[in-house]
Length: 247
Ligand code: PGA
Image (tube, rainbow, N blue to C red; front, side):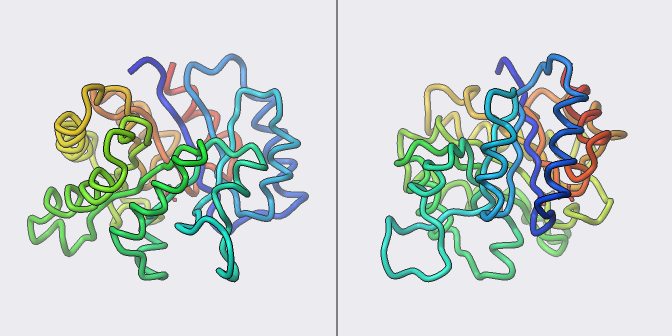
């Protein structure tokens, strides 16, 4: 793994004016980043990001993608449409989609496959709930979630990005300790190693209350290749500090 990847997940936040000032502040504060950077915005703002970020070191992506190619799927956004707007990434299987929209492992895998087919890199989220962690099921849960994607995309697995996001750490201010996170990342890396000859090529991001204060210790772990950042990606100084922690 050469460069880490820091991806912001704005979730359902923002607006034309707020996005513009946030992105401008980020671009102004960005010296020469030592990592890859991406911002994942709500679909209506992808054109705005394309315009604001063109020629900058920051890539952009969506927070979801349809598993279907095209047609009668009201409200959905296809991978081809994302491609049209220059999207490099699409988050798939975020726990909020799994929880509030009933997305199954199979659907998440189909979305990842569709994104890959159009040259959009899926950021596949996996992670256990607090109840599952307390029941000692963490490994089993994340392995099942990743296995569905491996099964569906086959040898293309080395083209994905994985994000380990313990559900209990998302938006709660409760972060996994670097050791807890590393332990799960090592499990995921071993699973990838059994599926591809190039497991180190796959970025495994940590997500869940990563912030300016805890980023460096998480990113120092051998199998933590970057972060998927929610709340802290809405504040330019915090996001810039996380980027700086990659140096
Ligand atoms: P958080 O969100 O950084 O606000 O915890 C992370 C995510 O849900 O991707």
